[in-house]
Image 1 (cartoon, one colour):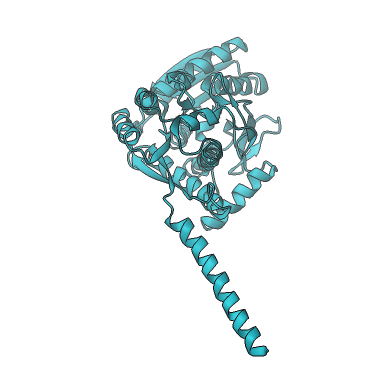
Image 2: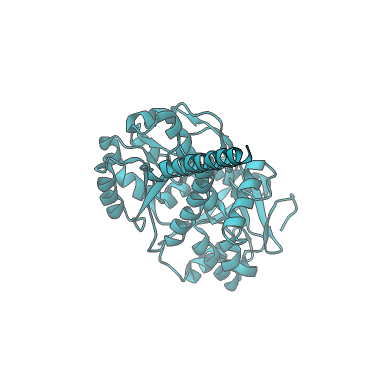
Length: 383
């Protein structure tokens, strides 16, 4: 009797092991659902492509652990555009002609994305520009969708922070001399004027510029109450350093695009007391935020995530949500963006699209200040 039980047990165990092995093999052998990513891995914006990959990969770990998309893995292929419109156009042509790719993410900058939009629109492939804040990006066609807050919404929030909250009445504005930077400048300046401020200096600069001192001397001599930076974190930190070197001690406010631990690292003491409006703040107690941070630190050896990691993490989870609804048909995926509701999001809490604008409903804004080398919620006290 014991021999029969032992044989039965062994046969049952082998059957269970075979079944588990078959399930793992089936999951591994099924072709993954493939996304195309167009973004910078080299060139002046290369760091953002690296941050994207970290956010993507964390989200994919969690999606795979939860069983994938109806038992299939989700994967991506990342093509390096250098955020150059010429490269993004070539990548778009490649992605549109590849039937394996069901959805595209990127590019990093709005100009690079918008140059490629006509190709995605004609090819019927969704271009999910999750960092594309230019207000015209989603006007490129019904295959353009974005989880990025439009500059038409974001820059007035920064203007309100500078003028209404901080009480700054004479402002100097330095901005990247790109389509994104000029558009952001215009929305900021117009909103600041509506709030009662005067713009005494407006200066653009190119992405490769490294010496801002002559510009900053002109800003200093105009004697503004505050300096506003429409910059990324690397150039924003450099401008802050050189502003202090030329004796410009006024309040500095910066767009959310500087929000990163790297801004603190590169800026050092010079970014102390800089004010920043942002969509993402790690001290937010929402479980979506805290679970993201804990998972990121575990995967990346204690590294602190920043906003661009969070944008990419949210984007991959949104991609999974729409594919669960739309399957792998490109047109059905486009239609699914209008159907997803309350997708958990680090940036938005829950994310639902406004179908008319093809952007997320409801912009959140945290008013931060750098204190003791860290970002903190602004307490209303003067710097």
